[in-house]
Amino acid sequence: MKLESQKQTINRSKEDVFEFLSDPKNFEQLMPENVAKFEPNANGGFTFALSGMPEISLRKRESVPYDKIVLGADGGKLDFDLTANLTEIGENETDVQLVFSGEFNAMIGMMVKGPISKFIETLVGNLQKAINTKDSQI
Image (cartoon, rainbow, N blue to C red):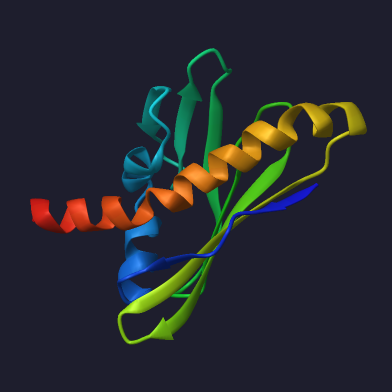
């Protein structure tokens, strides 16, 4: 299964967006409002749980400076990747698209398609506000 978020234009350089997404702690700001748990972990990733859902742990699998960051499932029953693809469209404009890919049987795929699609849209949709909030705290 492969699910792609809409491209979100962020009013920041590709380098700024990459650095923001490279810090697992920053993903907490991207999470939906119903996040019940969020903890950075030692694998360059984080563990989170949404209300009523099991915990999911992600670790950094790949990092291509300024182009993409790949987080993958760190244990658990399902193996999947979440990739952030960055495309420069101007000096201070970057398109970000999240791509979820995993191998699931048909029944599991039907059950998770909607919630995962909504989840990745929420993450990418919260990015502009989160990256601006981080700057205002410095």
